[in-house]
Length: 147
Length: 145
Image 1 (spheres, each protein chain N blue to C red):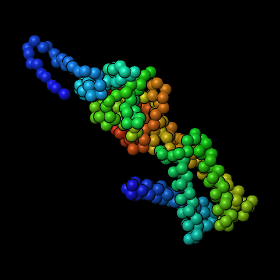
Image 2: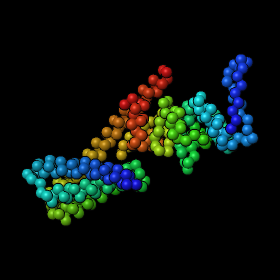
Image 3: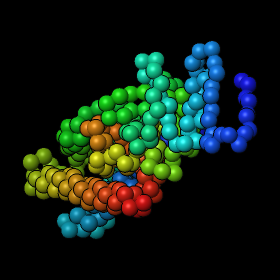
């Protein structure tokens, strides 16, 4: 039992670290483009908390033993709504920007670009990987027939 | 169980005759062991015993500690455990897909990757099965990735 908990914790921390790194990179790249030259301790903590949320959503929707039995498209839509609402909530609680300001709309566009871009990236990756698998399977069968 | 061996020049090939009171589980296990030497599987369906060729089996699945072999249209109960099937047929076209299933690679129609490192495979009979993340490397190795 303890071994299972430890393995689960390590896996969770690994995925969360990936999301945290991605969050920091996104902040640095887009912050730099918007004129930011430093990152505050509060921002790091906020990105850290947000990473925990994304990891939790990942476990809720996308792991093998998920209890949420929905089509992938529905999961993506629900995840999109949760992330959007949490980000809007955090932006207001932590005073990232004012509701309806120019920065708000820029961030809204950025969120959609990143989310759709991520989805498109995954779609292309899975298509290519699936193509490779099926090609290898075909090759395997041809070799088997020769034998 | 009594084992008698008759050695004679008259016998051209090996013949095994099983004498028993009833065809119970123990006898089926003995028959299964013998057939497994020929890489064939014995399956029971509606009280009748059938000899199954590996190539006709789409997949094996373990449900409630019982193992079943699925062919194109029928399901047979087999007395072998999944690990025994893996040992017998793992070096040919069969591979472990999940903790409870072993699939025949020759009966896969297509493979689609899924989020989380899993694979969804479509069998030739139209059924969709999953390959767990932990068993994907085995399939990859078989396919020569």
